[in-house]
Length: 375
Image 1 (tube, rainbow, N blue to C red):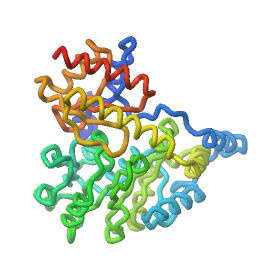
Image 2: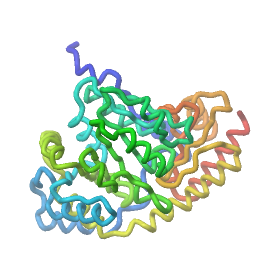
Image 3: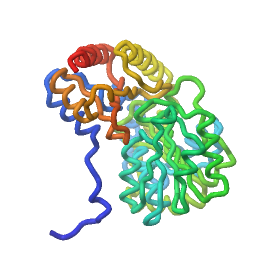
């Protein structure tokens, strides 16, 4: 056989997909795995796409994104305190391509990316593809918050970026002001990028501290955002990144070589989404999250308190099973599916998603509670 890119050797299939598929093959299995909104895309967004298609908006868009959409994104980011110009916005195929473009664009072989864990597995995968080295920063021993001491100890001369995701996938934890102050202090005077994954920022209970709002970090900040979570647009595959001008100069060329551009009619739909109010969906997730927490407390499970997103991350360490064994048995014996914590770099935990109707959530948690009594 002819050798392939050696950076791909270590890549593995997403455990989220593996356990979701296993659940789908199990009759009447309650699906608490995938982080996909169960709501339909707002009608106004679908109407905008249909109108764009009817008007012949089926040709190439500009590589950086449609000007009207980039202007609207810049206005939205500026309104929330992150001063942004349209020229600093790159429209991407979801936040996944935004993260891919950012990391591939800034990393040289052997450079390091600090990834607070538990964290989304995509970060490590893309770092590996780019020839970099992922450096986990274990937050399970510091209350799922970042301390200056731990972060500073993880930084080396090869550190190129730190990734921040708040509210966090898989825990739903919001990084505190103290955590963000620790990050800011640790990177002071060092040439380190901050990659802020804000895909859950609209699904946050109350105030959500955000480093992207700190103008003092503007020259090192790359923000990734998606329309998927707040607007129930996972299948549309549209998001964006913002970055300083000198970074955009290179990332734009990389994105153009990768995708050319996001389809024009989908960008029209994204523009319509920015006029929608995501609050009703966010409130539904808040209610489900609160219910999920009450049930886990009733089961006697320990977990970090989620203040956003639509996940909970309980510890199952006391049952003496690996997270993969636990999740496999829970599907086979109780017909309820979760994702192993090992998928997120945190063994001894599982991720539960409340992106489902309340009756499905109730059914799944009833079955899980009964399953725990058999262990």
